Length: 231
Image (cartoon, rainbow, N blue to C red; front, side, top):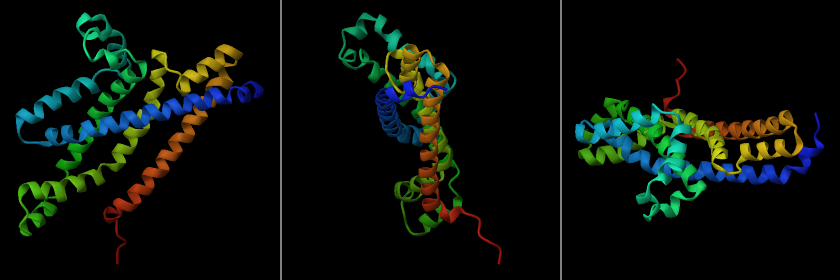
């Protein structure tokens, strides 16, 4: 292996890493904002609320993210109405299109995670809230939703890691993220193994950091769910 070209390419990897982290944070933030109301609607017994969300999550989860990204970045641009609308301010940007595709995708998966956690709320917690005189809305906002979000942490941690890896698709729409940086290093040095294994190791390091952060969060907020030792 030749390491000298990789050392010279360190600024390019650093820039790509920054782009990857920006994409990840922006997509997760927007996705979570969308996912919370969608998850609540998905868990609702009201069909008028649940079915549109069900259709959305089915379509998003049933199609590859790469196709979704290409539809947003390449597909929408072919319509004159889109190019002449205010939406074109964002859609003409590769960064915006990548964040939008990632956010819509993670919102669908996270909505299902939140909905499942809401449905799994123990009946005892709800009965206890009612016994304290809480209304249905108070019970949901103070008991059901906070409890569901805590229980959703393990599944959501997997979603965050999957989104980290999915940011690599942004390199296909001209963005120089971590994967794009590795591709550029390869094109300059003709060292494919070294270029891509370096990117892979950085992704692995980021994954380990995320796993550690979520394990700490789970240890703090899910401690009451840990199995108690027998007396």
